Length: 276
Length: 311
Ligand SMILES: Nc1ncnc2c1ncn2[C@@H]1O[C@H](COP(=O)(O)OP(=O)(O)OP(=O)(O)O)[C@@H](O)[C@H]1O
Ligand SMILES: [Mg+2]
Image (tube, rainbow over all chains, first blue to last red; front, side):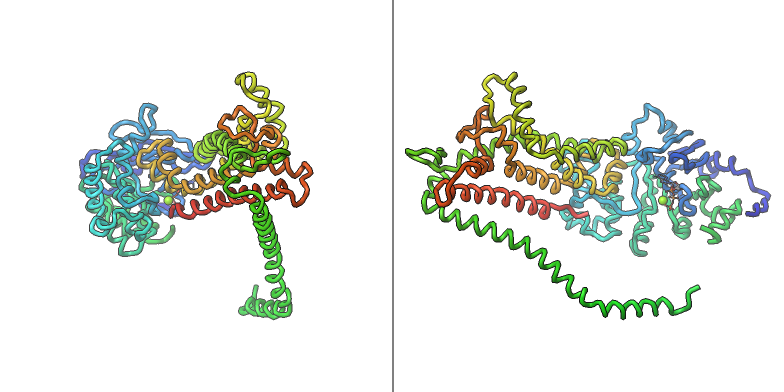
């Protein structure tokens, strides 16, 4: 691969990554510092430095197998489900390291919700799906639960479609509706951050558009990290974009900059569809 | 390199060749059907015999006596009495004891294997449990009689040398692998996405297990219980050896009790002449036993269909 011709304003990669973008000045929800992750011998994440700002949509793009999902799952420590995983470095969530022994993983996951690639509602009614989190965390009062469910379903822009069928099994809904139920389920425990791993890759264009619009609305209240293979989607909905390649962050910047004026040749190649 | 169209040619040639062997194509379904038909025919034959002989039995003994009396005294010269209730009681008590062992232990094992065990632990434990399932029931029988009963008698003073308790417990141990492996199948077929969904919401492992996995697998789990019950009802060797042959109508499991299966063993191994009432009673008891286990098996099927979760 030929190295990129350096542009005059190009700063070295490390610097641009460690510093949060000066123009936003928004506080950070996550700050990743020197994160390395191994699946057994596979070095899946290599010295990641990446800030995630509050009330923004951060998109993660990159070719298949470059570590996007792994990074996302590191943020809520779901990656630890894999027995062989080893992690070094730190991820600060609101200034405390999530890998500290004193940091309770359940606590983290109630603050950091996740929406998966394939909709995965529970085999329960729509109501019970959304009420599931609040119930687990101790809310029993019927009236309160009802309010939470309605609020969450409205928040996920699906209330009007399901308000008359809350007692039906969530699996009776279409894929796109199921995905929004999963988003509602996530909203019901009022998280701080929402992680989304290719949330629209299993959806048709119309449902995709709905979810994209929803993401735009949600960033008013939540901070969102979204993994996507769809370049247009990243460009449409995100404020910041990180480009991953072979377990490294090649470039992180404002989405506009990444898509119009990337500083790394590899980013440019990927975005213009030359590989990946 | 393949020539364009050559694959198509090869397929067509194969097609032609197979059409000449169409005799096989026609014969196979017939053969398969015959095999299936033989087993169906056997079943029908058995059920038919059972019904006929049972009807003959009820010519000699009233249905009322059979199902409501409490005394079974087939060998009495003076006044033979034929009530099945003591046998049902024996079957019921041993089955209940067995399930009190098999359900909690089996389910706990299943939960451990499916949700908690590391891959290594699972690899070691599963075959060991399967060994338990492979032990012949006669071995369990003398284990109950020569080991469990004496040990229990140390603890429970009033325990008779043959009793319902000891074979019940051992039968429970025998059924553990069945409950464990069927429940484990049901639980591990709950998609991982469901567990991840719950974990990602801050649920603990315990909450995921008891509020997501078990509810989602409940039909399979209950079906495993019912099949276990069916197995306990039909179990013969253990109770014949360790529970004795006293036809007690009692709830006292420290005493000897006879089950339906053990009664059949006793009568068939004696020399009941064909045509005698005691001979026909065999069929009436067998019929009752058959109805019990059939009901249980159908219940298990119904449960696993009716309550199957969609996902
Ligand atoms: N459970 C696992 N065990 C071992 N290796 C894994 C595991 N999950 C992922 N990997 C490896 O880690 C690397 C990163 O995988 P990851 O799933 O994060 O990629 P991705 O960027 O999300 O890809 P995709 O776009 O296809 O979803 C890959 O090389 C993959 O083979
Ligand atoms: Mg992925």
